[in-house]
Structures are given as C-alpha cells and as structure tokens.
Image 1: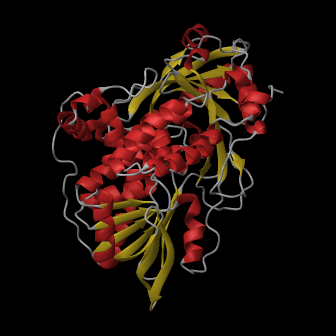
Image 2: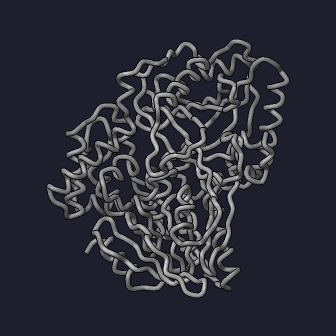
Image 3: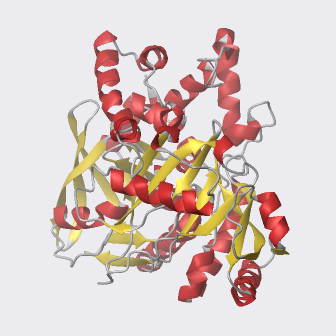
Length: 521
C-alpha cells in the first residue's frame, strides 16, 4: 500500500491537533515546529508542495541588506539569526556564498554602504558567515569581470546564503513525515463546517483520486501565502483584504555569461531604485533577478512577459556592458508572487516584508507575509500562539533522529539513506537518467516515493531543476522520467500521455515562445 493511500485513510479517520492549509515554506515551518513539539499534524495543499512562491523565489537565504534603508531592523535581525539556524539545520541545502556590492560616483556612497554592512554584521550576532570587507576598485573588477567600471569607486564583499527553495520546502516536509505527520499534496479545502464560531471540520477534494475527504482538527492554520484571502473567503470569515502581491520575474542565462564565484549586486539603471543580482545556480545556470511590480491578475497563473524580460536584460547590459545579452542567450524565465501584506502602498519595492499572525473564529489561526529565510521562526511564533490560547503543552522531540554519513549526505542530508536503500533493492538504479542531467534512477524513485512527487511537473521543476535548464523540449528525456514515475506509482500508459501533455504546457511557461521570436528592444 502506498504512503499516499495510508495518508488518505489517516486523514479521513483520525482527529488531529493541527491542520495546516498551505504547503509552501511557511506551512513547512509551522509543520516542522509542531512535529518537533510532538503534536499530531496534517498538512494539505491544493497543488504540489512549494508550487507557488516557494519555488519561484530569489533562491537566497539572507537577512535582506536592502531592508536596512527602510529601517526594518527587526525583520533583518530575525532573518540573519534564522540564516545561521538554517545553515546548521539544513547544511545540504543552505550554503554560504559571497556577494559583491559595487559603489559608484562618490566615496560617500561607498562609506554609506560600509556602514550598512557593519550594521548587518552586528545584527547577525555570532555566526559562521564571514564579516564584510571593503574592496578597492580593482578588487571589484577582478571579482566581477565585465562589470561597468565607469565612475566605480570600490565596493563591499559580504556573505549570505543560497539554496534550492523548493527542495528546502519539501525536505522539511519529508522529515516531518518520518516523524508521523500526514502530508497530502493535491488536496484542496472546499468548505469549512462551523458551529458556535468554531471550525469543526474541513471538506476537501483529493484531485489525484477524485474523492472527498473530511478532516477534523483542534486548530486550523491558514498558511496559504498569496491565497490567504481566498481561504478567508471560503471560510466566510468576512475579513478585509489582507494580501497585496507583487510579481517577481527572473531570467536564467548560462553561467559563462557572468562571474561564477560571486553574486553581483547592481543598481537598476532605470531610476526605480531596485537592486538586481546575478546568482550562480545549478546545471551551470545563472539567475538574473528580479522585477518587483504590482499584480492584480489571476494568482493561479503567473507568467513572465516580454516587458519583464526586456527590463532585466537591459539592466544587466548596462551593468555588464561587455556581455551584450540577447534574448537568444536566455535559457528560461520564471515568475512568482511575493505574499506581501496589504498596506495601501503603491510602491511595490519598498513595501514591508514583515509578517503578521492573527485569529478568526475560536480555532482558526492565520499567518501572512514574511520571508523565506525566516520560515522556522514564523512557524515557532504560530505554535506559541496556539499553545498560549489552548494551554497546549508539546513535548520536545528530535526530528530525523537517525544519523547518516553515506555518499548521498552532501546533497540529501539524513534523507540520503533512503536512496541508499533503493540502491540496495535495485542496484541497476545507479544509472543516470541522461548524460546532461546527472540524476540517477534511484534519485527519481526517491523523489517520487519519499519526496512525494505525483506529477511530471513536481519532478522536473521542484524535486529536480531540469525544467529550468531544458531550453529545448526533450521528449525522450521527459518520457523516460514519466516511465520511472509510472512504475513507482503504479500508473499506466494513459497516465504517462496525460502527464506529458500537461507538463509541456508547464514547461512552456518557463520557455515562452517570445524568447525565440522577439529580439531585445
């Protein structure tokens, strides 16, 4: 019997302490903290885990240097402390990486940046991340070959972190599942049943099996990010609008175009005061980001436009004039929404990244806003709110208590022993799926069995990063991965055909046709 069937049965038959709605990084943080305190938890998401904002972020674990100028010191300090916590807790996914912040036009600007980074270091407290260093003009040029050196006065070298955001989210969930949590992707909450201002059950739809599920929990937690208002409306809680999302678009180019050993932070030349960046990432890709614009369209379907791509390419052509980026250099693009709180502001870039936690009904808790880096702290504050209101007392347990030091630890932490077991059972699964993408068959099985991939999109975009790197449609590769998944899930040829058709539409959003037909304006 599959883990999903077992989880569906448990969801229908058991009562839980907490039901978390939302399988992004915020829901994962709450789940982690709840399981660590011994609570009985179920988490559901209408799509795949991390399929929203949590797979479309900057891929950075950082305190937020730019928030200093808006005096969001508490936000920065919390994120910096969580940065250290994540480095220690998930070292296979959170890696320190050097950033270079150039300074132009005047020594005052350089002096101001150094003061800001000194404060950044101070707010971080005791940390494994190195302190900032001042760089001369030549040192900046040496570290960032091709950078615009006109009026360059020097720069600052500092350290933050980078990650695979989707994998971080899903790994946290998989560890919680090993400690008894019930996790269900593709299960949508349709209706809230209430009595005396208390939600006593949720009516859900399992989009995989097409069946209805009734869930019961003492506390319901809404951790749906940009979908927060949608949940409030479905629960008929008559709340005012809470969210005011902004769209962020990133462009992916070959790593050969930009420095591979540093993140370059540059100012937008368009006068909108944005800070843009180059982030060396997986499969010899570099991510260029990001836009930050108001968004009022369909939150379930967010795409990059020609205008978005032009903005980013033009910005980096001015910052790195020798690169001469054209649209045919672009491997792909991705667009996501930032779950920002509604504050009436019309300046998307300067809007607060703070978060808030509040109650509706007697047992319905909501959390909205926040940053990827602070997800565990956000989860802790949610659990503390619940314990305070209901006089609940959890017991501290250690998640993923077993140790593992095998060959897969570097990339998968303690979950690596699951791959080891697959290889013991199926030695032939050590073979790679292709010469370009060096994932083994065992890893594809692991992503399906342990990291709960249910569709090709889950596998190729969020458990691996093949979607980002596959500039040209590779039907042979897609079919081979569909076959491995079908065998693991017990699905047939019809399922494979349907999945390939669906995945092609998804892949096309990351590789829009206009990249092939429209020149850079």
